[in-house]
Length: 258
Image (cartoon, rainbow, N blue to C red; front, side):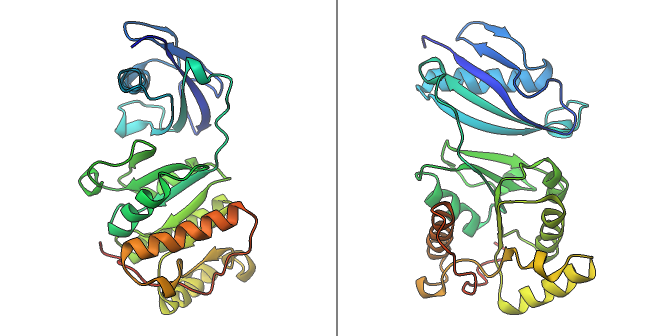
């Protein structure tokens, strides 16, 4: 376990112990510098030492403070973990937030994980719902009230909404329209989306703004199995990254209560 991992605060959303750019070096038996101390720093050092043990060279972790880490700050920090051999190579992949760890959310994670170009965060309200053997490149985040996490997400992120509950899907759409995003898709039927559009309009969003959310997602020609939906979603995201127009008129309901 030679060498070190540099842990850098890449983004700060809300209150946090240190500002963006703060960093520390973590070695197998000691560390230098600080990103603010407390449970956050302890967890970051733990992640870094596991990377050293596994020979992993790069990772990005989103860590909500407050109840999840027992810190009073209440904000969220994004940490970059870079091995000494890669310190000159920036992590500039766009963030992808997947809201819902059911069968379809898991399938999207597993399809997207091997693909370059995305920093993937999987959000759910219960750790028991997280898939087993989640790929190392996926950052899991547990939030009792997921929509409250939206203001702490990067405004340049892609979002895929497919939670266990229609009301939560709608709440996330509302919060993301207020917050901003690069792209956003919600799983659902045409009937569900018509109802959502009406509710979002009543909540004060313009029709033009609501239309920036794509629903349904995926490609019905591929089928309704979670893995088939995931392939369609991956195709949309890759096409978006290549500045290719995405067909937002297709999709499928999928499993809302997975």
